Image 1: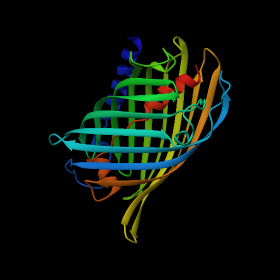
Image 2: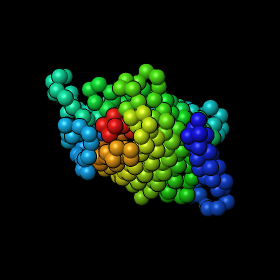
Image 3: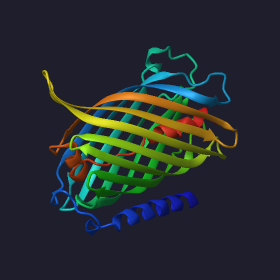
Amino acid sequence: MKKLLAAFTMAGVATLGAHTATAADFEPQTAIQQLVVSGVVESWSGYTFYSNVDVDSDDDPEDSFFSHYSGRLSLPLSENLSAQMDVDVEINTSLMLKSSDEDTNDMEQAFQGIFHLSSRDPNTGLIGFFGGAGRGDGDENGDYPFFVVGGEAQLYLQDFTFYVQGGYFDTTSEANHDDDGMSDSIFGRGVVRWFLEENTRLQGEVSYADGTVDGDDDGNVVEWAVRYDTVLEGLPLIGDAGVFFGYRGARFENEGENNEFTDHTVMIGFRHAFGGSTMKEIDRVGATLDAPTIGRWVGAGNIID
C-alpha cells in the first residue's frame, strides 16, 4: 500500500508540474486546434542480445529475434477531454522455432491493454491518468498477469514534446511460479520528442521501476531507448510510408541475490497513422500517448529470481 501511495504521489507531482506551465510561457507556432479521432498502428522486428549476465541458472538468456505490434486509438469526448485505448504485443520469434520441450531462460512474450483519460490543450500540454492489465512470460513456465495504474502529463514547446509518467504495477493472484515475477512496483518514465520536421521525429526516453522479486528480494529495472521516425514519400505501389529505427536497452537486477542481466535490442519498424496530416499534428491533437512494455519488466523477475 505504501508503494501504491508513493506511485500516486509521484504521478500527481509529475502531472501537476507539467500542467502549471501555460501557453504564456512560449509562443506556439500554430493556432489552437481541435482534438480529432486518431489512430496509430506500428510493428517492428528486432534482434536482442545480452551482456553482464549473472543469473542463478544453467541456461543464460539467449540472443533472440523479437517482434512487436501495437495499436492506439484516441477519441475526443469534448473540446479538451479525450480517451485513448492501447494494445501492445511483444513476442520472442526465435523461441517460436524451437521445440516446446527445450529449456529456456528467455523472455517469451508480453502483452498489455491500457486505457488513458486526459485533458489537453494542443498548444500547451496534457494531463491525465491511465490504467490497464496484461501479462509477461519469463520462461516456458512463468506466466505473470499484472495490472497497472498511474498518471501522466505532456508539455508542448514548439518543436518539442516533453512527456512524463508515473505509476504502480503488481502481479495478480493468478500468476504462476509464486512470487518470482517482478511485483508490488512503482515506476517513472520520461520522454523527449524532437520534431526536426513535421514528419520527422527523434525520441529519447528513460524509465525506472522498483519492486520485489522472488517473494521479498528488492528488484529494479532501468530502461533507456532512442528512436528515429520519418516518412518515406512517393514509394512505388504503396505511396507514403512511415518508418522508424531504434535501440532499446534495459538492466534488470535482483539486489537480494546479486543477480542481473542487461539486454540490448536494435529494431526497424513501420508506422501507419490517421487523424492528422503530419506526425507532429497527430502528436498534439491525436493518439499521442503510450506506455512502456511492462510485461517485460514483470516477466524478467523470473529470470533474476
